[in-house]
Image 1 (tube, one colour):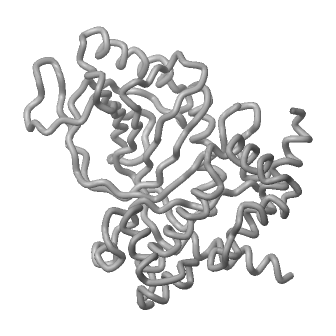
Image 2 (image 1 turned 45 degrees about the vertical axis):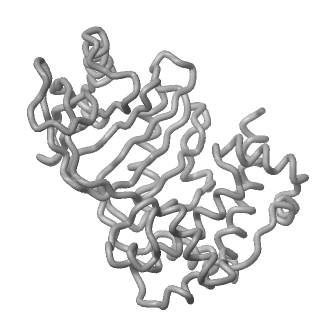
Image 3 (image 1 turned 90 degrees about the horizontal axis):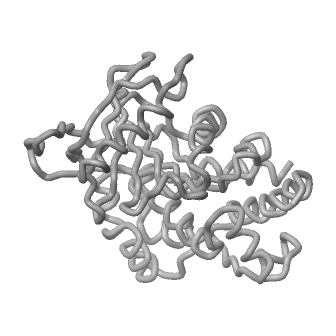
Length: 311
């Protein structure tokens, strides 16, 4: 596919997304959405999944639930009214779907007051998209939180992504390689790279590679790091691992300035599945950035799209 034809395709999906974001309180049949983009149902499902890595039905459902969760956090509206405003036909169906997705009823989520598992709207504005040459999918980004936990592993001082002389692309693989060679990466457990940026901006910081542990003391030859409870923006990355650094630059330079949250200095996390292989042509992993949620992101998006549509 040529760059111009891909931009046309993304533009058609963007038109559908604008419609979805404006009408989350209304029925959104896949057939109708496909017609808006000028595709058959089958073509639309295929193109949407290829460009975003998501099923359109799942995207609509998760965005509706995330909008409801955001309204629970930022408004004092009744729960039944929030459910109806987000496209659910009854209090029972809303509460059931909410609990299935978030693991707790709406009232408990509101009392807890934390932005957990909030999907964020996809944006296909060409000015805000990662460069197509990266060959990575448009990242799905959510707002989430995580309680304090402990990671056991090995650390190294590195120069990171925004350093004038970065060395992370050499030191980080070597660190993971030393753990693997020593048999210290259990196959069944997710792997965490922890970037200690709690001291603020600087040319160097400590990077710890390891696995989560419930022990207070490190196994022989390993260090233990306590990661505090934090709120995060989570970038779900899919693509060649060499593209990750540029995707993160895109996140900080293009996505974050338009979001309702701001990054804070803390402990960034790289979360890899147990079977992760950096040598694979395409990988899946998550990058967690500590943030403070300042304004309702999804509600603001909804109002912005509505404003543009009435001009």
